Length: 246
Image 1 (cartoon, rainbow, N blue to C red):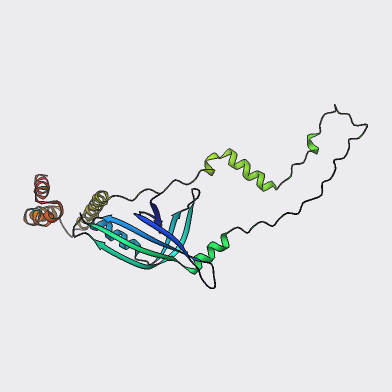
Image 2 (image 1 turned 90 degrees about the horizontal axis):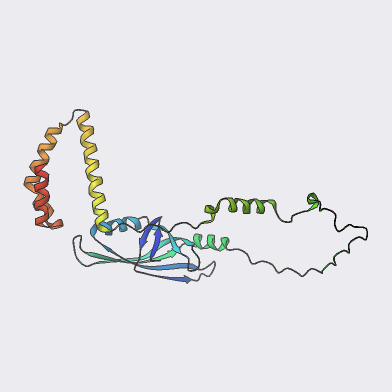
């Protein structure tokens, strides 16, 4: 699996390397080296914002089984290199995360203790049946006793009646690609501006007709020039034409 979780967000990595760093007065710390390659300025900035807190909770898929190993980590080193400017550029992040001492102590405390060896018990011979006992007599079920803790049996019955409760959690969804992020951000920005205009119109601060007139003027004067570096001149002119015809 080429995904990990950082503060609950799924991140696709190009490579990952884990190692243990021993301590003199405590359990060893886990150290994780990551290489993450992102395309586009928006995805690059989103990843930097994700790393901004400094103290990061990292979930790494377990090497055996379907579970996750959880570490509270700090950023030791972080390097970024870019192939160029613009949305077509690729951004490489080389990051080293080291587990905190508190996280290592927590993991050590959660490890199950080894079971103590059980001394062999002397075998007890089974009692011989009474001479006057009738082998054909019915069995009294009320006298039958079942060993074990009652809570264990209750848990087993719940698992049998609710099979879905034992299913493993689904894997995290992959992060959105750059075009999807760009489209979502454009729609959300447009909706926020529309909500602002509705509120200002409702209290009489602006008029809808004035906002529409200013928008059409800015499209004619500035849209093509400012959109060309991002989407190209041909696409910018087509978009401006569609906006003016609405």
